[in-house]
Amino acid sequence: MSPPDPTFLEGVKSACTGATGTPFVLLGNFEVEDEWARDEVGLPVFGGRASTAIVNRMDEFAVLLAGPGDHVVLKSAPDPDYLDYLEGLGIELPGILLTDAYDPAATVSEDALRSPRLLAALRSLAGQGAYLLPHGMSALEQQLCELTGLAPALPAVSVVKAVNSKIYSRRVATDLGLPQAVGWECETVDEFVAAAGEAARAVAAGRRVGVKDAYGVSGKGIMVVDDTRRMDQLVRMVTRRADRTGDQRVALVIEEWADKALDLNYHFTVARDGSVRFDFVKEALTENGVHKGHRFPARLSTEHAAQLVIAGERLGARLAADGFHGVVGVDAITTTDGGLLPVLEINARNNMSTYQTGLQERFMGPDSVALARQYDLRLTGPVTFARFRDRLGDLLFDRDRGTGLVVNNFATVNAATPEPGDTRPYVGRLYGLLLARTQQELTDLDNAVVAAVQKETVHV
Image (cartoon, rainbow, N blue to C red; front, side, top):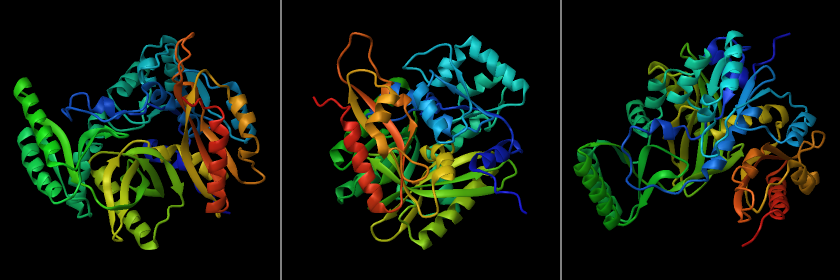
């Protein structure tokens, strides 16, 4: 009898450490791009971003990626009823380590570095052969490894940062001959001025262009331009800043907007030995450039699916040659004329789709359809998981039925709770994975969950 195929996580452990049983310490340092961008010169103005407090509590996603022999570092303890709920689904939870410090505006990595008791616990795990697997590797996580002796599961920061630049994405796609949107990579002000002139002609002809920071994320660090006057204004702002600072560097990409049919995210794992495992492709749900969830299986032709597998293998080989190993998600689109652009950007870090893998393997049957999404809330005070559990009732996933909502992050619901006495409404998010047998059943379930959670929302 042949042994069972390794799980997704076992494959990551093997790729990053050489053994499927290596204990991991997982760290959900979301929006690590902010650290990579610290010394870069990007756009002089930025798009909106989600609440920092909410983003920083996305660290709880790591609980459902980790295995029972692993540990997860969190900024604060999960709601105990939420943990009971997960265990009631048959999920073996990892060990949970808490930071000593808690600053809503700080990432879990920043809090961890200020936590003597946590650092001592991590040193003990390092002595047992544990590796640190962060959402993405930056100087902060490298410092955490140095302070504790944890081995890094990912390559050096210099490598990780380099391969996560949108400039790198475009240049690799060009080198490999992969189709991509018309665009320009800009590393100096002169390059930007010249590219902006080319882009302005496209805008004058009725096309839109996007100007992106090399390390922008989640709708932040991007400007959509559909007016030549706006492009001229941006050029003036960039050149004036350079004149004022004497710094002629920029880290920007300009791309013409393609006529999109579907947003896609495909995922593969690159091993230290250079081998590449293609993991999956999902349909990405976005709004104004901000990630909102995934639908899978993706509504994708067999031909396009095969092309993404080939693109993933070629990109993975190039990343390996450039010194990277670990998980990779690539954003792609199909176009309204039936085409495929397989490289919008390379995210050589955990992706939102990464954190759904454990639930997929455990609960998704061969005929299931799934929707991973966030439910935005407007609250006036903290809400317990028990209250949400009662509110959702039969809408929650039932193992015997094989359908329903699995809550995969509850910390983000109350992350932005204001100081005591402040009763102003605030924003919260509930994240979940919905499983159903048909697309219509999935739509009906989603609508029912929206109606249920809206009962907790204050309308002002």
